[in-house]
Length: 254
Length: 254
View 1 (cartoon, chains in turn purple, blue):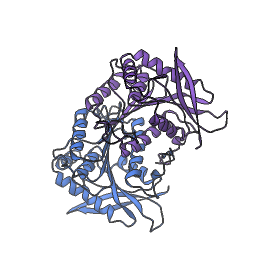
View 2: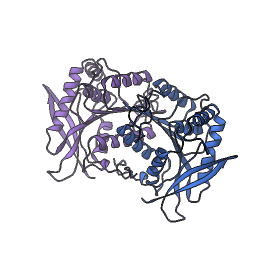
View 3: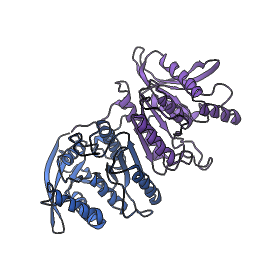
View 4: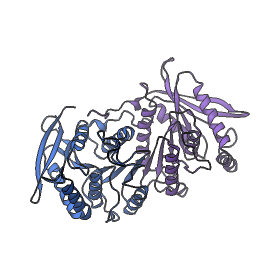
């Protein structure tokens, strides 16, 4: 499917934000399901851009949103400061990601409800949106942080949840996974957790230099498997004739 | 896809066994990938038969094997005795399931290596095959028992492993899941575990009477999701043009 790419300018209060909008090249008046994509700790980088293209090629209108604003990405001190501020202040995290979600929803030809996917810090972000009852069909966390200072209240989660986790992720140990499972059960959410054997943190980062950052690395099997799981999940939560992920040739014939 | 169904008679030593063979109706000389299907604790029942049809409809040659032999299914005392004997004697379990695998492999037009799928007791069975290095492309455990008296040795597992587990399964508590994860990591196996929120034991049993057996129940979402996960898994471990599960329209276009 041919895709088109544009910058999308929006803002969170006085903070100007610049996202990347990647859309299937379809005639006007033909809505496609919307997908908010939240980058990892480095900001809106090549990884986030390539992931946005990956899902747009399936027929989704993808907004790879900007959680930092200008002058942060690439400056280690400012990045750490921005990430810490949002991690410690869920209201800020919700407002900043909510601005992206609002910008996506305001576009013409976006079928709602939208879904959201996030990587590492972005996984924490989309799970925070889900915990606070955001109007999303589903959220996907890819090697995201699962711990939270504020657990989801019973009945608060409206979005279906898919968590894809690497078993050897030193940043998100197994005890965080079991605590997340307990939290989701208490919250009575609709959730799934997939644990990929041998995968470490950041397993979708095809360009990760092996050994460059301890505990972070690409895992081709976990990347492919989690992409397929995400396709199935999106097809379930956003069934739509415009997305090829919605067409499964293996659908039950029994 | 049209399917044909036959009984298949084979044996484990002096014990005569009668499996159900369910095949796609394709011309002779056109091999299809083989799938061994191992029933749950009740024996080769309607659930196992319907699951066999489900996968045969995708293009697999499915042998729903017989782990009990004559005169056991339907007799509660004999069933418990047979299950206990196989649970406590991995050699017996391996020999009995291996007889089914040999019978499947000996059929004309079965592409090898085969894969195996099992439910409840059958999940334990296929994982035992994997732990002991059976020549299988992959094994799938659906709400299977994960505890084992004999852990897999490092490097012993040749089959890729997919475990589909219900988070509220009282027969397989979360501590068994984390112990299994530890075991698989130690064994350096290629494995994935999917935990489905809210699902209890036996979540694929569409005919389960709600409340009839405590902790056992159908879960339509977990059933559908685990079937899709199994389709993806089989397409990965047994790529074959004859199976519709192998055709994914959402394959990566980025």
